[in-house]
Image (cartoon, rainbow, N blue to C red; front, side):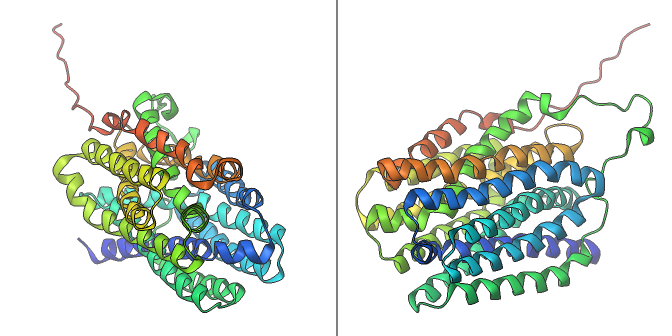
Length: 397
């Protein structure tokens, strides 16, 4: 591996780490934010809709922007928006304004949705150049960021540290790190040639017509829903659904994030040994077991252990399925962008619907649709198997 490629890989690791740090810093303070703005469970669902709406706008714009400009400028814009959104969320919490928190979440989601799609395109290209399964480790750095952010948030929650100062400091760290590493990301990755630049006969069918790719997208949707639900609601599920105090609720979320991190850092070996389809199926089954225990068993120790299973199960779904999407046919960048876009739909439908269901049936019962999706995903995992090699037929003349 050349020094240039090693620096590029390190930059991608860092760029995955930053949004993980930011999102867990916010999530670990959700009980405090809810109390500061005086929101009910249903109102928190509406506030979180800002995150969902921003995410959808970001992901819908990201694919075309990457195709037009390449991944690098979209990564820069997205990471900057993540940092700015965190600061605005802190301002909303400090002033007791749910509207400002929702606006900050909208900007945060815009950066996450747009930047993460572009970052996955860059990550898939680095994985291709390295020639081995690296996407799980890249997402592992996202999870490592969530662990560090969650541990910090847990400690700051316990000492009642101001949310505004906490999130402002996180925003400053993200911006400084972005400036430091972005120069190692080359321009042009994912950019497609215009119609005038294509060779004759180079037109291809749109990737969204590929049934195999759409099935992989369904796996991503379910596993992203499992991961995103924990990111949005796990501390509150533990506090309201299992009777934990806010600091312990944040600690359970930290355990979930740690399990995600371990699963992603060691999962690459399992993928290389057993194949993507088997790894995805096992991942979904473990995640479903964790979710079921959180929902149906009314015991704090079981709920905490189940959150670890939930994290292990959700760890490989998103990165491994993205790698499978990139290898499912021609035009890898477009396939990764489409699959990531399908998966990020979870951030649109999840928070508000779970908030509504949680208000009427309780947050534990609100997790049932997520459980059903994850179980259903196991039946789509065979789509992640590698393509059979093409056989060139010879015709006699």
